[in-house]
Image (cartoon, rainbow, N blue to C red):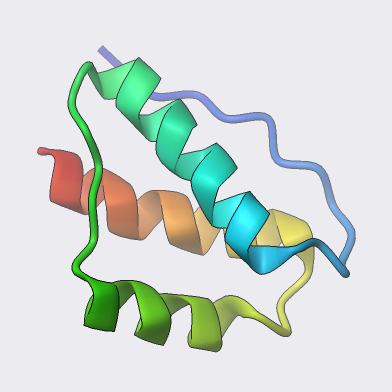
Length: 69
């Protein structure tokens, strides 16, 4: 089963809300909770905060998908 996301381009998204949205999508697609420990989450959000929204979504989804396996 593959995971598909609709990633709009753009920037300026609330990074915390974006993380929560992507986490919900990953959980729904994989039937598993995708959770990062707080230090990992903080590091990820710091790394993606200046990226365009589409790229940030990709990076967040990649990190969470790896964790959901």
